[in-house]
Image (cartoon, rainbow, N blue to C red; front, side, top):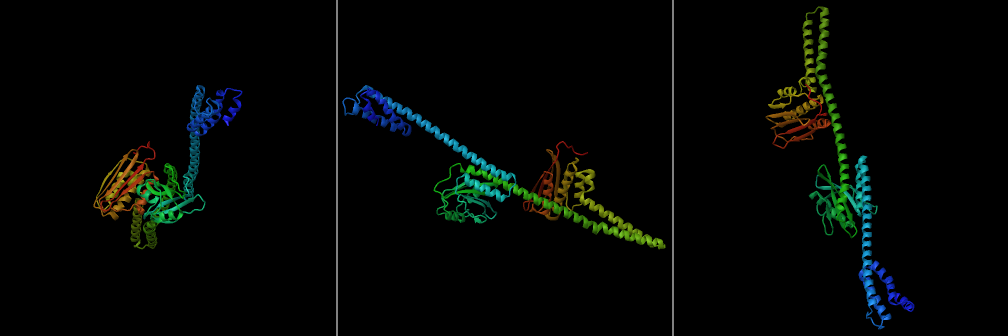
Length: 480
């Protein structure tokens, strides 16, 4: 077309000057297709010009210096324009990738905020699990996703599932064995993210489910709660494509929120159990006091009152037996007083309130049937700290005498870094259960004060109970 235009205009204008019109053919090719195609178009254009308009006619020889210069200029122009177009196109692609990355980041942050809001509002864990699974599937551009919890018998329980089609195809509420090929088994064995690129020919319950649903590849990350691998979240593809390399990191952000939800739920459950144990212990203590009062001091006082009434009637009649009945009444009153003293001592020993932890512990171990080495601070501490420390030591020594078969025990208590540290150790048979009612009660008492309790009781190596009771205010000085 350009050559035809030049043929029309060459009668009015110099033909060589019209060669610039070929740029209208060369430049669009340079912009769209690059320098190689633009160079071919430039050479073809000037060969056509030489063939039709330059002597000798109908020859492809370019003998005119002007035509050769025009060709060179056209090729250089084609190169410059194609390079500028390439760079502009590259920048446009980079900008588009950046916009896409920002969009995906914004979507991911929105998804994380939605799940985090559920966790912060302490939504039911089932609702949080469903939300996490859905967001993982969407953010990973997956076709299916599922959250699973590891059980103690090396199985997993499916807790929540999502599918792009809207019909949940993965099983929920079922328990699967971990034999064969699965994301769950690899995560459990390594504690790290895992991938399965193909389930073709794989064995195992989860692999068979994947084959039945047409799953081609999967990727998953562990849900770590309190340092243990609690479960796994996996995303799966039924399409013939693979997950990009950064998929694991995207899933990991959501597994942290799932772990937070699990931790919160476990903390709430532990708190409720602790409260229930505290209430049960308080009720049991109250009933024990009531029983001890009824069966002990109250009975003695009733007998004393009866004896006094009989003595009074004997005195009114001048009966000489009045003295004997008065003696019985005095004996019953003394017994009742002793019962009340022992009962009060069992609740909180007088030595503790009068002299502090050291004399209270010394008084306690003096009544035990085995030798106990005592090294206890003599400093006075806040009343709740002293009382809790006494009960921890008393309960630990009770377990020593009743269950350990120990020949000797040791009790230590000292101040360190603004806290009272307790240590009770025996040389018994060990094997003490931390979930026993007595030790659970100690744990609840220590936790109430913001402290910690540690129990080590390997079979055959004795029992070691260590507790730390922080002083509520570091400025509080020991009582004198």
